Image (cartoon, rainbow, N blue to C red; front, side):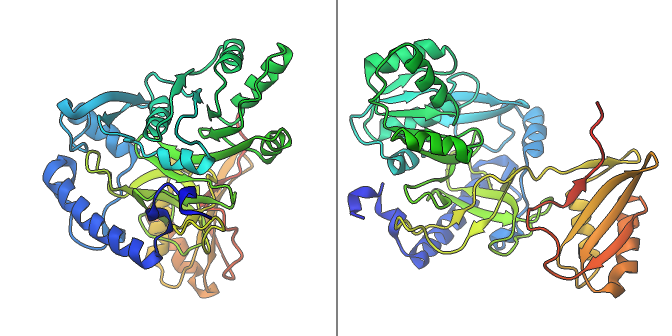
Length: 401
C-alpha cells in the first residue's frame, strides 16, 4: 500500500518504536494525572500492570462526591466545547481541540477522504457518538450532514439530494435507509462507504452490504475513551488506535492474560485532558496474533465478545469475578477457573471447575468458602479444558418469567 493509504506514519512504525514512544508517553501521562487530576493524586509508581484499575462504578462514586467529573478530568471548564452524559449518569468532557475523540483515523481507514460528505446518523444529544464521528470527519476535511437518529424516510430523501459518499451510524440503520430509499424510488448510489459502531455487525449484514457494492467497516469505542480500535479493508480484527494503550485482563482483576486468551478490555488513554488510567470497559475481547495484512503494525483485537460483568446472586449473596480471582490467588498452581451456578431442587449450587492438579481440590473448596461465605463443589480439570471465552461465572439457572 502507498503511504497515502495510511492516516499517518504512526500506523506503520515498528513495534519497537511504538513501544518506546508509548512508554515515554505513559510516564508523562501518569505524572500529568497525579498533578492535574485529583482522583489520581495518589497513583503509585510501578509498571502499568501494577497500577489500580478504574471502573465505571468508581467514576459514578467520584462524580457524586466531586461533581461534575469526580477529579478525573485535567481540563478547566474554559477549555471545554461540550459536556455529555452517558447512562448512570456519567459525565464526559469534550475539549475544544480538533478530533478530540480520534475518529479521523478510523474514518480514513474506511476510505473517507477530504471533500466527501459524511451522512452522520449518530445521536447528537446527551451521548457523544454524533460528535465523535463529526470531529473525525472534520479533521479529514469532510463536511457533515448531522442527520442524527430516526426519521428514516427523511434520511433517505436527504441522502438522495445531498449525495453523501459515506454513512456513519449503527450497523443495521444504513440497511433501513437503503431499503426505504428503494421503496421510494430514490437514487442512493452515491453511498459507497459506511462506518458503523454501537451494535453487533453480523456476518449476514456484512454480506448484504457487500452484495450491493458497499464497503462498510466497523470500530470499537466508548463515551469515556473515544476510539479504541478500528477495522481496515483487510477485515481481520480491529487495529488498536495509536492514542491508547490496551490490556486484556482476567475479569474482575487487573491481571493481564496471555495474548489470545479472552479477558476484559482495560484501556489507558494518552489524552492529557481526560487521563483515564487503566479504565476497565467491562467488555470482553482477545489479542490477535501477528499484524494486519493491510500493513498497519499496531496490535489487533478480535472485537467485542461480550460483557465481563458476571456477578451472580447465590443464596442471597453476590459472588463476583474478583472473588473467583481471589480464590485462585489463594491456591498455588491454578491456571484458570470457572464458577458454574446451577439450580437443583430449588436450591442454588456452585461448582468451581479449575485447571489445577487434583490434590488442589480441598484447598480450593476451603478458599471458595472463605472468600464467598458459601459452600461449593470443586472439580479439577486438565489445562486447556475450560473454554477460552472470558467467562468466569457461568450462571446456568433459568431466567425467571
